[in-house]
Image (cartoon, rainbow, N blue to C red):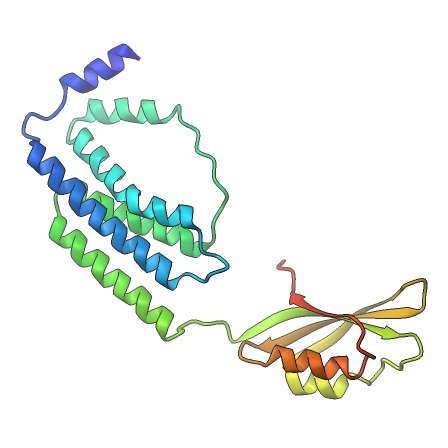
Length: 226
């Protein structure tokens, strides 16, 4: 390990100045903060992760310094790869949007590391603007949402058609998937697969159902993904 770091120190680029390093890191920080701010303003609250926002701030700096450190020295690149290979990263898998932000950060950090500050700033500003436009215009928003509806009814209620009128009014498609008894057989639980519009009034939908099931338990949840 000592030989590894001695080799790295000896092979440091002689043309890399302190001022160049400072400028690179400052620009990388600015781009990282811009990307993190875009993530903060456009991510849904239930999926927002503060830890990811902080990571988006610092990742471009780390990458730019690594690029400065490696330079064009192949031996140094292999030495660094060997050092990083002993580190094991642990994290929870994120959604596709989070992964996209990570790659966004990587591109910004690489542009700073190779000295293309103007191109990196232009790329970051342009892509952040595109993300804001997509979010504000609600482009690519899901129109139909598949959900699971569970309705508890008394045993003497005829469930065959009592909810059909309400289901036709608030859903685009529905089907009764399962019926089971509960509470020692005194109640029935109906399980429906329903497809609803994203802008449908779910509260009013549940209120209308509640008026027909004797104010017993009703559950509406996202359908499990296959």
